[in-house]
Figure 1 (cartoon, rainbow, N blue to C red):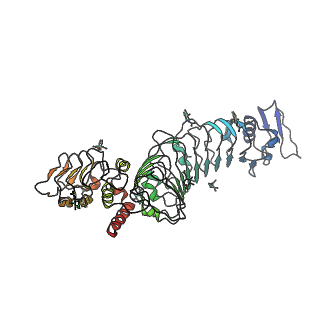
Figure 2: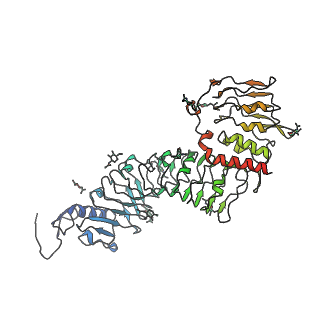
Figure 3: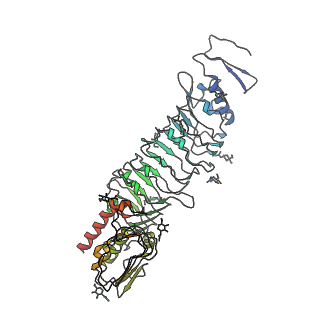
Length: 492
Ligand SMILES: *[C@@H]1O[C@H](CO)[C@@H](O)[C@H](O)[C@H]1NC(C)=O
Ligand SMILES: *[C@@H]1O[C@H](CO)[C@@H](O)[C@H](O)[C@H]1NC(C)=O
Ligand SMILES: *[C@@H]1O[C@H](CO)[C@@H](O)[C@H](O)[C@H]1NC(C)=O
Ligand SMILES: *[C@@H]1O[C@H](CO)[C@@H](O)[C@H](O)[C@H]1NC(C)=O
Ligand SMILES: *[C@@H]1O[C@H](CO)[C@@H](O)[C@H](O)[C@H]1NC(C)=O
Ligand SMILES: *[C@@H]1O[C@H](CO)[C@@H](O)[C@H](O)[C@H]1NC(C)=O
Ligand SMILES: *[C@@H]1O[C@H](CO)[C@@H](O)[C@H](O)[C@H]1NC(C)=O
Ligand SMILES: *[C@@H]1O[C@H](CO)[C@@H](O)[C@H](O)[C@H]1NC(C)=O
Ligand SMILES: *[C@@H]1O[C@H](CO)[C@@H](O)[C@H](O)[C@H]1NC(C)=O
Ligand SMILES: CC(=O)N[C@H]1CO[C@H](CO)[C@@H](O)[C@@H]1O
């Protein structure tokens, strides 16, 4: 080993026996040997061509590389440089690294751990051929603000808990990144108060929207096109509490239930929810949204009147791709409105929304039987229904048989049903009903068997098996729509 000093040189490298042995004489002006070693390993494993300007002995003089005053490597910015090869495993030794930008190259192999790079603020790896992401990839990245790792053929992975270390995270974009599992229940204001972009489209994510989204600052949410069998499911009620949203892409999933109240989403410009299984009427709160520009509703089971939007809104709503009562805007028949109010209290089950098309409930609607144009039988036996029995049944003046047995209905039997003039039979057996049984006329056959709490007063909040789709969870917009529909009926 030979050591020499050179007063005129700011930096002196002595290379012995090729790449593997590098010795650097360190003074305050010299790039530390650890950083040099990593950069040389990077240059080698990426087969960096001479044209990139990485030939100076000091990597701080390389193009697209930045250093601090202390000559520590802080920036590697080699996006779109046509690079191939792999990354060295010692990247995590660049302990002052702030930006790692490798996007749109053809770099392959596993991503190395970046565990502990506490200065790292930006990771841009989009558009490469990386094959795996280590589970401790995000551990200790306490300064991390932006992650862009879209379009990489990773082997299947789940978003690790360790990303919670990155509490300053603003952007997390991982479209087409082979993520599986559910959306973790921590992308909310408690863990990531500054998160504004969450893009997880075209992955294998399944399950529901996490409750922790409530109150988040997320402005751009892309969850469209999950490729798993199950896709994303459940209602999107939590969206009503994400009042910073500007752009929401949820299309091509299996979301269900009615839309929530949009009145708090004052900045919402784009809402793409086509190709799902949403039911119920399109809420007025959405039609009235001033900020809205683009709306995609095609291929759902939306019910009620066809919605009308301002001309400034580009609407994608292919004809006959929903379950609106009419092929153009206009009031539904009052019997249709009554039935919609009835199923509203059951969370607008998909089975009805799929079957109930057009403006005439007597035209072979599932569960409905008519006699000469009047609804005489409602038979919702064993349909897996949750929610409550609507007092709106009382509007079906010709109703003779009301059969609701074998479901999971909660709440009480509305007293007003005893006033149904033509009623001959009511069967609500085998549900979860409670409360007083109304006093029906003596000629009405009443079956309430198999409701453990019938006759007792039970607080709804403590009732067992209280369903997630119960009306209490969507009173917001639903109530407004219901009132609006009633008002429209009165005006007709
Ligand atoms: C990385 O740094 C550690 C000490 O911080 C050192 O032990 C190790 O040899 C370095 N690894 C490489 C590959 O340079
Ligand atoms: C990327 O690398 C693969 C082989 O690893 C090669 O087939 C492909 O042409 C490369 N693409 C580009 C854009 O360089
Ligand atoms: C986050 O993404 C936005 C929009 O692409 C961009 O303007 C912003 O600079 C990104 N933030 C960081 C920290 O990179
Ligand atoms: C996702 O990962 C699994 C295994 O880890 C693999 O079989 C599959 O091909 C990957 N999918 C994509 C789209 O890369
Ligand atoms: C919306 O926020 C309110 C107030 O924090 C909360 O009570 C409610 O459960 C939230 N609703 C949803 C669907 O997240
Ligand atoms: C959504 O609708 C807009 C306006 O019609 C259209 O330009 C856009 O391509 C649609 N997006 C999808 C995903 O269908
Ligand atoms: C159908 O209902 C209307 C209004 O309640 C009533 O006038 C009519 O008689 C009913 N028709 C039959 C066949 O019951
Ligand atoms: C009622 O709910 C329970 C628990 O969710 C479920 O196991 C059962 O199948 C449901 N019964 C009916 C009739 O839907
Ligand atoms: C039921 O609700 C009433 C008021 O609505 C309350 O006073 C009572 O304590 C509740 N009972 C239980 C068991 O929660
Ligand atoms: C430095 C730091 O906060 N580390 C934490 C990162 O996340 C993992 C897993 O959640 C924790 O175990 C570490 O303590």
